[in-house]
Image (cartoon, rainbow, N blue to C red; front, top):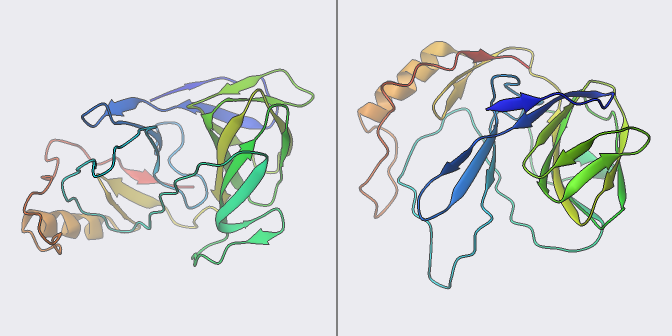
Amino acid sequence: MSTRQSEVAGVEAVILPPVRDLGDGFKVRRALPSAHRRMVGPFIFFDHMGPATFAAGQAFDVRPHPYIGLATASPRTASEGATLTLIAGRSDGLVSPMRTYSDMVYADIALEDAARYRVKAEHIERAVYVVSGALEVIGQAGRFEAGELVVFKPGAELVLRAAGATRLVLVGGEPFAEPRHIEWNFVSSRAERIAQAKHDWRAQRFAGVPGDSELIPLPADTPPAGSASA
């Protein structure tokens, strides 16, 4: 995981997630958590999977593995034009019907070439992930490329312009009052809860996946990632 400096006022950091091949050429980029930034609002994991094309009847198999303290959403998008699709939370006068437990935003934004989008200070913490294309900032030098997570400073407002057809994801929200501990796929405000989850996974006390007897073993040699505070 690496970061790069940006000359754009209002940008805290630009995170460049590493690429991991999960097999059969299926690649995943994990932008959060990173050494520079553990969370953005309530978002503690942020993965970019693919792109990939599967033939009819083809699938990508991942062995069963556990989670605690997480709620996941995996949108699939394929649209054209300048549109904002609100997946969860609120943004730009829209409110998603998806149930959430804190004030947040999770939106998919598609911009045609030269189209603009204003990043508003509606939430304390915000970031955009450039899925494809590139972004420029009106009135400032600087450019953000595909595969970069751009974290904004609290209160900053910028107008982004698409350099070619561009797709981005906007995430953010209110920071949690208490820190979060992270180890593997386990997240909790209590370290002892993670220790219990590790014990339960080793003892196979998690509910299994019907028809699948495989599982991913606990990474015994992976040290805890410590706590994450927003």
